[in-house]
Image 1 (spheres, rainbow, N blue to C red):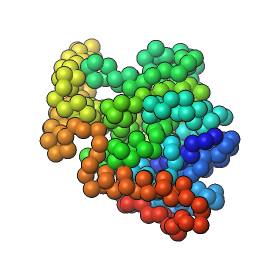
Image 2 (image 1 turned 180 degrees about the vertical axis):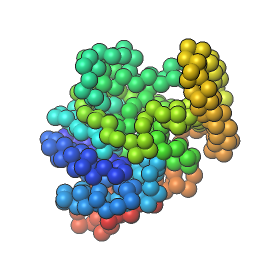
Image 3 (image 1 turned 180 degrees about the horizontal axis):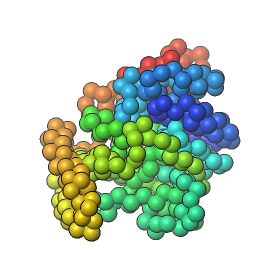
Image 4 (image 1 turned 60 degrees about the vertical axis):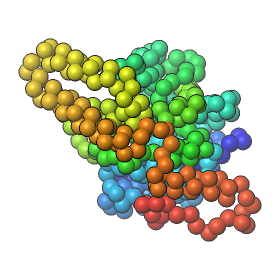
Length: 343
């Protein structure tokens, strides 16, 4: 395997999941060149768990829960892989995950990202939506269906954050994840946003069903996934993401119109649930509209992040690659990482 791979795993209060995640990575042949666990937990259980695995890098993100892009960015500042893979702590890679991923990248230099299957181990999931995997529709709606098995590689518009990878030089060019906007406790769309930016640079994103991980969906620290708070943040973040990537383009206005009609139509079908559900979605749209306009005016719609933190991430990743390419004797003793710190 000719390309080096760094794996980044953000985590919060799931030490047992982290253990299994690491063990599955270490069972790969070959193993990743670098595994980085970024922990935002309020106690030391995860740090102690990672200490059981020599060579696995532990970082602590003192920002706490709800800061997944911040954790990913901290890890990027010490990552040296030509490929940067991202896993959730409750995503357990399966046999062949790493070589199949690398093979996909090596097949075409214009492939900038590789998405893998996220198996829930539910009956029939391999056939659900296999012709609509990872799409961004004309009205700004995202399709998932990452458990499907299409039987071939499929080009996609976005990837799933629990099992995805991007070329390191692309992430460096982009300046990492955009973490300058509070995205809420569910961290919705933070991985989708960087995928859209990578495509805007002219790279392809490919779903390879042989890059498999079992995504068990551990209990959410913020409570049940599909509650009203989740609906609010989903609507809000999806619209912000569209503003930040497409400015005032037609897809933004199609999305707003589609959601208004959809929300109203859903409420007519379920009157008993109407007020709460309608309120969550419409409030999310309103919050997304004002936050999106503000961020569009503040940072523009270019894919590259060019603020101070974006430049720092870009420079750190480029430096790490240069260091990794040198003989071991010339490597510096330590690499540091932004707001996170190594234990």
